[in-house]
Image 1 (spheres, rainbow, N blue to C red):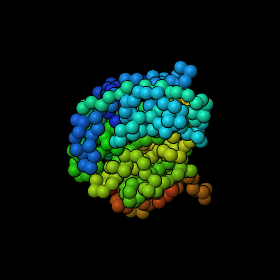
Image 2: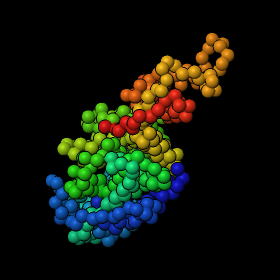
Image 3: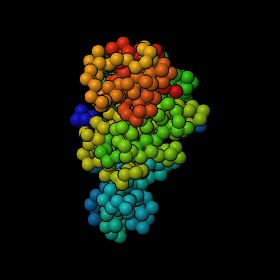
Image 4: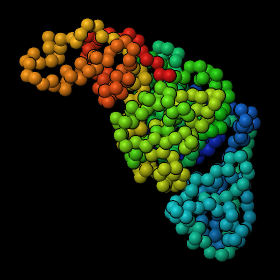
Length: 429
């Protein structure tokens, strides 16, 4: 948890957007943690499905000065002050003329909102509502220097080969500046998840991690990889909003009944029984691209507090240390590791005895008939009774209302004592 939190602090100040130096700095730092990460690019102007990759946006400076010469806001102080992809503008405006170019949040009077205008040229400043209400009549000096250049959209891809070419796909985005839960928690947890998986000596599945700007990055990636993903991916995770401590949330697949939906619901039911499940109609991140027809990847989002559902969302109040914590990030990591454990270890067990096995001679059951079954042997026998060569470990756990880990441990014990054999792996579908 501390390692992830420290990494988020390291990435915090970079001026991320759809393109540009902030994205490249973020990817370079991630690649230092994940040496196998490839940093790829798609040139500005490229047609990707129904979209066009935009030019790179470069901010040289942006400052709003009041009638008394005092600075109202400065991009150098907080990169949320300038709307994303703002055009250049220099001039003197009255307060009345300036108001349409100011953005604030009346319900969060101390917060600076996060506002973007990626695909239409406009300019504007984001300030706290308190500051906006304090502005006095007079002439305000607007000085915004930005430029657009033909460059590239950059994204990172890491592939960790497994025993099979069936894939688990993990996506996260790297385009929001100075937002803790809605942005940095995703790539930070994804980086740690990739690091943990890469350190394992064996992997049944191949793992593919993609770090890309939201929406346009996912669409650009799909433009060249959709066929491969559609044929190989058995389960997919979109990592966003995984860093606070308030709650757990699930956005299931578009159908809501894919194999990964069962896995995610099982994990959250045992990890956080009060988790909230949202319908597909309340989607809002890159699952919109990867889970939409005709790509139709089995993608879910297991979040802490979902985007739109916490008051600091898309504002300067979404901070490290207040909204996102080390423990919050650790919780976000843990549910994904647990889900991957299920995907990797969901076997199909088969009993090797006719009638119940004698547990007592194996030290698994008291030989003193006292009329009461202890929970241990009773549970072992319950698990054993469902080992029919057709029912998977997860299905047995669901049937018994216990966690996968408990069930898997019981099956390991039965296998060790040659009371059960494993006759195959249940592929997530």
